[in-house]
Image (tube, rainbow, N blue to C red; front, side, top):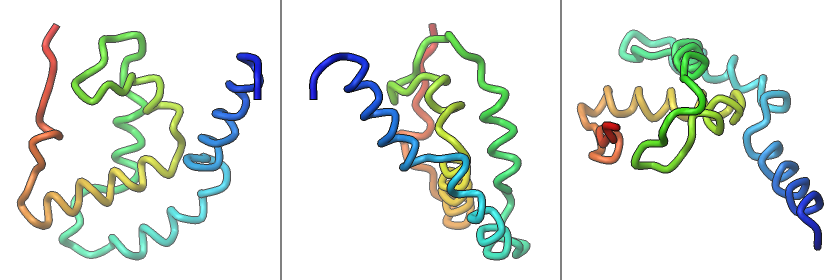
Length: 104
């Protein structure tokens, strides 16, 4: 595989399959039924709304992931993050990597 455009298209196709906002819509219904218990405090829509509020063209944090990548990752990322956040709350544990920040 040669050429910048060809390589970029290959990565685009790969990431669309991984975090596609179109192919994974059915997961919301499954996730809501799993997390409808009282002990789950964060919903997928909450995470999606916060992702939508991220400001683009800002400095990246210690994870090295720009806000643009998070905003365009698709629906499945919000589902995974919601699971992660609820597990952190359920177990009263927050990994150190989640609380690291960079002040510019």
